[in-house]
Image (cartoon, rainbow, N blue to C red):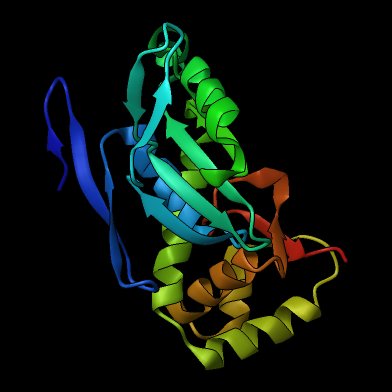
Length: 204
């Protein structure tokens, strides 16, 4: 449970696959963690990486701690700050990142990113949480049955009907979610994953 107040929104996200807990300090940061952990592009996620010293615009030494340091599957490292869109300009984070990149270059990260609610859609967060849960409930039989059904699809099918065709109930639902997660199925109109959404075999 997050500890909520008018000034804080703190808690942890548990990643069972990595057997780690990730600390968040805002709703946006929590959503970003879920999306990152579920993404097939992310190899590792380091929350609250070591602080970085840099010289500010007046030449004084300042310290900044990024919200996350992501290592992608292709080896690229991304230093990320997560903030509400309304606070990006006021916080001066873009200038802080520019100075750190200018002074440290790729010794800290290959790319520097600011992520706001524009990048953290509630549907994507919900899908990420669903995918992380489905991965914990692995069922090879359901995966095989669903993969066979998906291979025979021609056009769109309501997810509920695919579950019914499998005869496996909740195990099939989780298998479908896992198949969506690896790109074997796609969701119509990028809708939130649910029994009522439509899916089809992903195009090659």
